[in-house]
Image 1 (cartoon, rainbow, N blue to C red):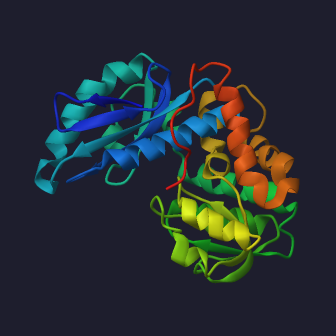
Image 2: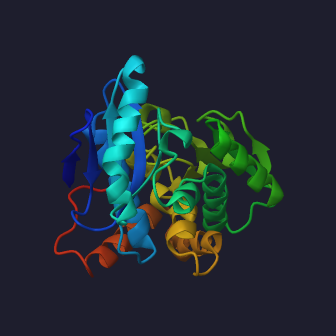
Image 3: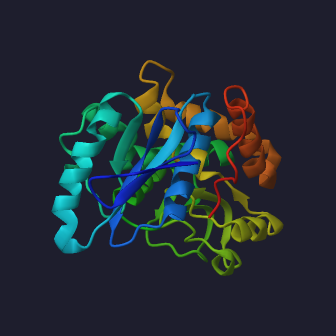
Length: 287
């Protein structure tokens, strides 16, 4: 993991794969932790690798108090413009940052596509379809809110499911779609889950201990690096096959493995990484 320290403002970019082209979100807060940025970058690395792309994750943090925010964003945009123009990095809005904050940076269309929240919701439903085969007559619970949750609810309903957009972690359902901060589904909450399949709507919402608990309960967890990959594929492979179908097929291929799906997806991503990286990045994408 290469951490590039910004010089014009208090911030950094965590590049997961050294000199590889990178994609990832920008977050702003009084104190953005590097560990969190590195985890987000790792998830993107595995998403790209899962679909055969030679791209890594790159997540930025800007440390600024509210009264420093505008000045920090101006300095940030000025400093990173050359990286974006050169294709080294494709940034998008994360916590504390809006699309408008990044306005003026190069590659506007690719940025808008890669971080499309509506597309992310549809991608997660495509992953759910890959995991269970059909949503017809099934109950889909949605934990979280915002554009991504709304899009997922609409897509699930279109595919014949009964959507519960106000679900809790202990809601009894066939598929539980989870949006929230990294690690939002931790081990205590995992013990309350009554879904058959958990599908992330946001990066790394499941902790390592939660994954183990869910597995022992026979609950399948679809990796976030598959379920949220649709917009990334739209941006990076515009001439390729339908991105949502690719997400569906990627999950469906591993679905027969049941609770082994998560680990099988990791192994598949790492097999691709070995084809163009001298060593695997240390640590897997789990909070």
